[in-house]
Length: 284
Image (tube, rainbow, N blue to C red; front, side):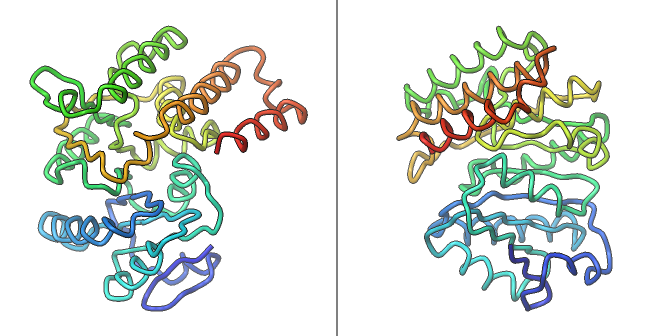
């Protein structure tokens, strides 16, 4: 894995020795094959953060298994901007796997993650900053009275989202107060992340469920943040693969159900772990 810092590539083990000061905010952006959008996204985030927080931030762009020019674009931009930290992994990690790796490298007291496609208007970030003054985990919510998000979403995506959320509320009663587990924008205190990091193991898009459940089970405080959200169907990683992605996410929900039960030890069975891995690879 490569990290770019101070205009040169360095080994992961020396990263912390080189950085002099710790930022308050860590912005994490997973970017899998985002060559057409990542530069615009990074430029917009940098301008916004410079205007509101001076240099008191870092942007970690985590790229896993990219087959396009995304790593080259981000590396080039990072050479001119010390606040940009590229995290490059040759193998595909999945959204959850990529975020977990980025969380390990994030140095800020407050960690915020969002999608690379610019779906979240940047001004909405300030809502999360304010919320973290009173809670441990702030969860973006796209479904609220007056929101236009659901009217711009393709019908199959809307149905998938609402059915999945309903299923979660049945399987995990504590999630009944969370109307939108899958919004791509969330923020967490670094101290809260330390408390739950051993419970985070989901690598696919159900990672958000893993994160929220872990926080609830550990007694952390949560807040729903009602945000404006712009849906971009162009180059979407989900729209054309709803059935396949849905199956993998349901499998992860099953794993979470077992994890939070008296049968947790089954997840550590070599045979069962092998079966899960085989099924996930078949649908990846």
